[in-house]
Length: 179
Image: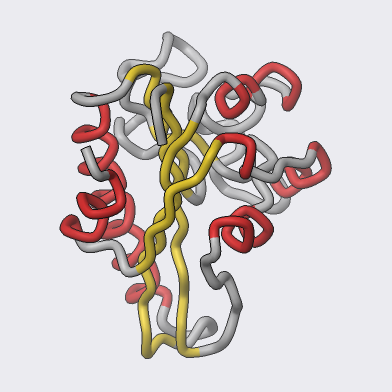
């Protein structure tokens, strides 16, 4: 399976194959996952405290061999006013990411999917009263895993610059198997 071609066919704007070793992580980056900074905190299994601590969840990355990093770019948005357009792009990005992960699950072992923010596959999430209802399909949080998205994109040869008028959503899918 050519993952990069499949990702482009699904509709991602930018795609790059990566090795799990290319993913830059830092415990300090998980600090953005707190109740003051993020409304998803404490609301799902892929965000703190439900996801666990950095040392325990780092295995979601380090135990995989390779994967793909993808971007959905939305042009013509004002970061301060166009919240509906930005959220619409985010929802489309996650739908494409789920589609790609499902295809990859048919070809590779131990597929794990990462995106911006916590998982929203189940509404409401079973956290904290019952186990995750979709543990094999859930969308892990890049931030909760301490992924330095900009540095990881740079290693993969992808731009991750911020400018008004454009928003970039990043997703990552890792698996075991050849690149």
